[in-house]
Amino acid sequence: MSGQAFVDRLKKKFGAKITGAELGGVDPWIEIAADGLLEICTYLRDEQDLRFDMLNCITCVDYFEPDPKKAAKVTWQPHLEMVYHLWSVPHKRSLVLKVMLPRWRDDEPGQLPEVPSVAEIWPTADWHERETYDLSGIHFVGHPNLRRILCPEDWLGHPLRKDYEMPLEYHGIRGK
Amino acid sequence: MATKLDDPRIIEFDVRTDEMLVNMGPQHPSTHGVLRVVLRTDGEVVSEVTPHIGYLHRCAEKIGENLTPRQWIPYTDRMDYLAGMNMNLGWALTVEKLMKLEVPEKGRHLRVIIAELGRIASHLVGMGTYGLDLGTFSPFMYGFREREKILDLFEEACGARLTYSYITVGGATHDLPRGWLAKCEKFLDELLPVIDHCHELLTTNAIFVRRAANIGLLSPEMAIAYGCTGPVLRGSGVDQDLRRDGEEFYTQMYDGYAFEVIVQKDGHYPKDHNYPAVPNLAVLGDCWHRFYVRMLEVMQSIDLVRQAIDRYSTAEGSYGEPVKLTEKLPKGESYLETECPKGQMGFYLVSDGTPIPWRVRARSSCFSNLCVVHELCRGCLIADVPAILGSLDIVMGEIDR
Image (cartoon, rainbow over all chains, first blue to last red; front, top):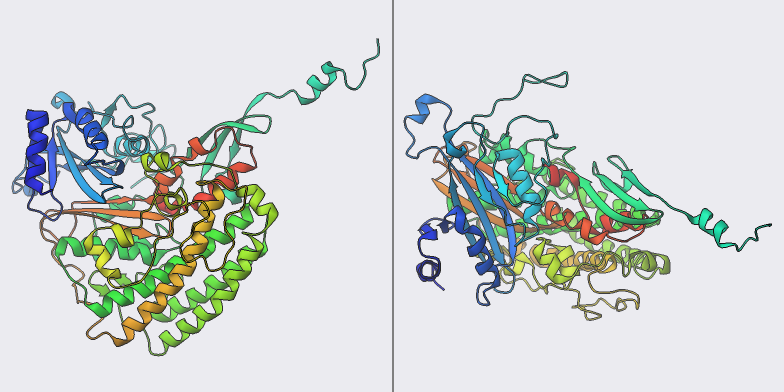
C-alpha cells in the first residue's frame, strides 16, 4: 500500500488524531496526537493486514538550541518529538510514528510532558520508556514501573536534554 | 515420646525455607559483564528476577551528538565489543542511507566477508561461554582458540584485535592485504572439524542437554511482543532474518547470495550438516534451541564467507567511496536495523544539515533480549538462571551503551 493511501485510511478511521505526515524523506513518518496514541497503536497492532506487532525503538528528540546566536537561525519552535519505530513480522514492513510534545508541561520548567504508555500494547516498551524517561525526561502515563534505568535513582536532570548541564558534584565525585 | 526420623515435624523443620533476596552480580562470571540480577528465592526456586543495568553507561549517544558520524565509529566498536565489525557496519549503513551513498560492488563483498567473520567470532564466544555457564570448560577454550585466529585475520586487515573501526562510511578504511584471502580460506577449512568437535562436546552431551532443554521457554508471541531478535527470536521458531527480510538498503549487500534462514522448527532444520535432530527433551523456544541456532549460524556464515570471497576476488572497482571526516550531512533522519550476531541492531540519526548529527540513538538488541528475562526465569531454579542468561548471549556494553 502506498504512503498516501495509508495515511488517508488512518485519517478516515481516526480523524483529527492524525495530525500530519511527511512522506518525502528517507524515512516517511506519520504524526499523531498524544491522546490518540493508545487507540491508534492498538489498531496498528491488531489489524490483520497491518500487524505491526514488534516495537523496535522508542526515541525522544529534543529540539532546543541553548546557544542564543544559533537559536535565532533555527526554523522550528522548541519542542520534543517522540519517535516510535514499528515493524511488522508477518508482512516485513516498517512504520514510523511521531508525537509532538511541548518541552515542559504547561510551559513550566521542571514539569515533565506527558504521553500515554504503550507498555500494555508492546511489553518491550517497558524498558524503552524507562530509558526515555531517564535520559530525555518524558512522563509516561500508565507505565507500570517508571523508574530510572541507566542513571542512579537519585540522579538529577535528564542528560539527553539539550540544555542539560553536568552536575558539579555527585556524592563527593567531582564532575566537569 | 521419642520422635522418629520420618516424623513430619522433623521433616518439616529440615526442609523449611524462607523467602530470600539473592544478589547475582554485578561481577559474577555468569553475568557476562556487569549485570546485577536480584533474585527473590524460596529455597532453590526463583519467584522473581529483577535485572539492574547501567553499570557500564558511557553516554555514547550524547557523545555521538558532539562528533561527526565518522568520528563516532570507534564508539560503535565499544558497544558490542565482541562483534565490533558488525556494529561499525550498522552505523555506517545508517549514515549512508541518509546520505544516499552507494558503496561499490567490491566494497559490498568486502563487507560481507568481514561481517560474517565477525558473526562467527561472536558466536564462538557465545557458544563457548554458554558451555562454561553450564559447567563444561573445553568448548570455551576451543571457541576462544578459533576466535583468536579470526582476530589475527582482522589484525592483518586493520591493525586492531578488538576495536577495529575498519568498516566506515563509504566502504572500509582500506582494502584487504595481499594474500589475506588465501589465509582466510585456509582458516575456514580448519574451522569445520572444530565446530564438529564442539558439537560432540555440547549438543550431544547428556548433561548439557539436561541443563538446557525445556528450560526458559519463550513462545513466539512473547518473543515478538518483547522485541526479541536474532538467534533468540529464531530459536522460538519465528522466521525472520534481516539479511533476507530487512530494508533493501541493507539486503542489497546479500543480493545473489545463497543462504537459508535458520529457524527452529521441531526437528526440521535447513541444511542439517548431518547433525542429529533435536533431543527428545528439547521444546521449541528453550535454551537448547537458542544455543543450536548459533551453532548452525556459524556453519551458515562459513558458507557465506566462501561465497563472498569468490565474488570479491572477481569484482571490479574500488572497495569504497571516499568520504571526508567532516562531511556535511543532508537534512533529515534515517533509521536502519541490521542483523548483528546478537540480534537486530538499530541506529537512528537525525541531522539538521551540519556535519554533527542533532540526535544519535542506538537501539540495541541485547536491551530487548534482556527485558524478557523476568518472564523466562519465573519458577525456575537458581542454577537455571545462568543457563537462561547465557542462552540470551548478552553483552553488557551494548545494553548500557
